[in-house]
Length: 357
Image (cartoon, rainbow, N blue to C red; front, side):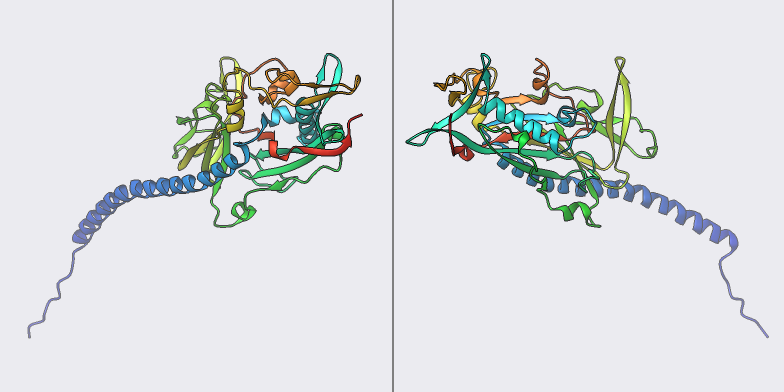
């Protein structure tokens, strides 16, 4: 009786097939990995454009028609030197703004901006706005990196803001749910000026298999191109988990920090035109504030402020450092610092009920 012999694959044939299959899989993975990276980069670029465009629109709406503006950073804002920017520090800066624009001291005499209500010379009242762009988490106020906060100080041209405690609360302007939601996988960082991304060495504690980039101005400790005539803001979007590492670098005997972002990372340049300030100071090298009638608190005489005098009118635009030295240099990019905009609006300046005396 003949038996049928069932044929199968030999061990050698199986090994050969598995080897071929492995080679094919390696090829497929080699193709899909770059495609996946391109997809991730495209996805984050799309989100960057969408989010950054909304942030740019918001900031333009807040700053474009400001009457005067101070741009400061955390390093400037710590007025009492305790290493922390608290309510008193921010109120002190709001008071600096109020005093320089609405209650200047000229020739040893304190002056106050005033108006006429038809019967009496009266002091003015208005609001000082403070915007903060967070580059780090604020655990005290439970604010996340990337959030933008806003607070408003009411004032009159006779009373210092620093005496008006309790101070107004700092309120988040962006939806906090975006930063807290589990599906929110991105971080924001903000830098003054227009920067580009440059490849940097793997930072301490970073993944050597990943590519890291930093803003060129941050990596080079450079503030060139940051100016009042073209106020730009670089918005960086990176992965929330392990997306960035703060690293230290030494250059020209100077030690400074920079933020290295792991790929994928994307940036958007937001231009912040200061329309009112630029229009008022088109022919003046140093922007000057709005000229108003000034009441001499000693002689009780009202005089018109010189519209070209920054002492009488205050500075139309100023970096925070200008209040501590004669420098007019803008701050360097430093993600250790938050960014502050201190400003007011002409249409919020009104006559108060306080008669000048």
